[in-house]
Image 1 (cartoon, rainbow, N blue to C red):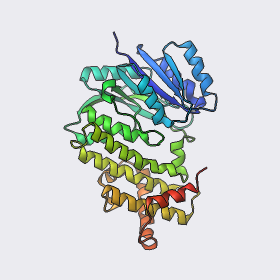
Image 2: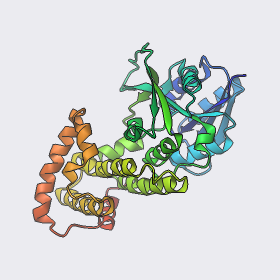
Image 3: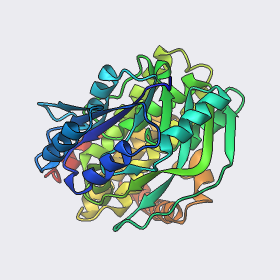
Image 4: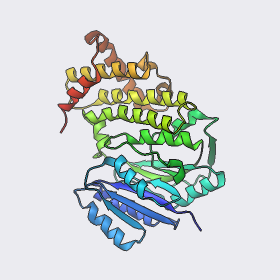
Length: 347
């Protein structure tokens, strides 16, 4: 009998895309699937769409949350209910290739690994996606190639996980950027990984999402990054993988810790004085907490600049800001001052 796969989908106000998402799941070429959809207090017509699918497909289970959980908390509910041998996370504004699950099941079986991944395509605006029939597969021994853990890109979707691999690992609740806190501990526990060049997941860049808005406008939720990094450290220590993977975990943490600085440089609608306070406070905090002497020389960040023109632009802008900060704020500001300033911009 085919192993059961549990697909967990948190939903919050994505009615515009939800049918496309659910159609991609119920039409999978792989047949033994349970679908757990968590309605995270949606206020649009998402619930009506979910209920319609549940009435027409016996393997869909709808869970209505009475409290807003954010994706991490919603996925945790899904994990508690999941009966599958394998787990797959899908965001409700994205969708899957028809053979996504069958391809990933093939990978974990052939390579005898607890985690498998495909490639994804980013979609902006109307559906203009294409397939990729590449058959190139790769097996990675993560104990011998620890740096490859960072290749998961800090996202939980587009991966198939053996359920027992996740075991007691959970997402932090009521935090954004929760993927980072979950995915890296899971990969350190996996110890091996198989992936294919085939496109299996279609990621929609939704300009109305909370994460995207935090990149465009001042938002104190950007500070959730640091809570998630602490959660990641604690999880790795709790599952006993921290010492073995310490070097790569610390390099990943340094890179992620700098991202709020990069986003702050491009924020719209923030005053010059407030931007300086935020940048200054974040610089002091990052240097102290993550052992960084020169923010512009973080090894893992520099390696990624080679492949990203957008990141290079952000770094150049950050360098200009930091030059001025050293003159205007010689003593810096702490993280609480940063939070205080950003609260002024909360909607």
